[in-house]
Amino acid sequence: MRVAVASEDGETIQQHFGKTTQFMVYELDGDQCRLLEVRENEPACHPGRSRQHGAYLAESIALIADCRVVLASQIGPVAEAHLLQHNVLPLRASGVIHAALLRLARYFQRAAKEQPAVSLDVH
Image 1 (cartoon, rainbow, N blue to C red):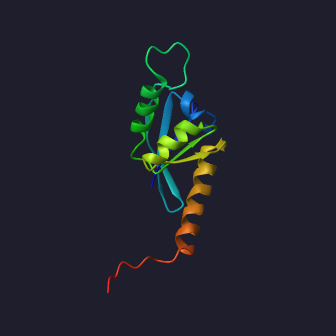
Image 2 (cartoon, one colour):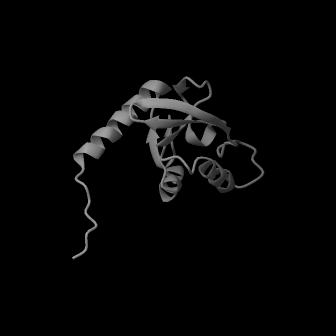
Image 3 (cartoon, one colour):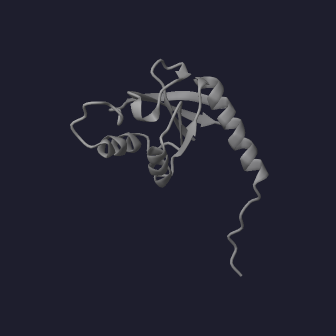
């Protein structure tokens, strides 16, 4: 599972989704996480923009559309709604990236075990 993280220093989650200049993209596999790449971003929330806020927001979302989750210190309601429409789960988080990714991985592992399998058999 791919996870985008709004971080300026590459160590901690401390950026607002609309203000981050980069996303760290990680691959989570079980309890392992590895950095795949750093993606440069034009922040949607920046004073003096010549284009509409929505155009930058759409570009930010397209940049991480292949990720299942995005972690940021803050995410506004408009961005949350658009992320969800693109099947990216927006989550507020802070602290050390590695620790947050491990907590996220454990959460998804527990959720997968607790949910019963869905049968698609048609009779």
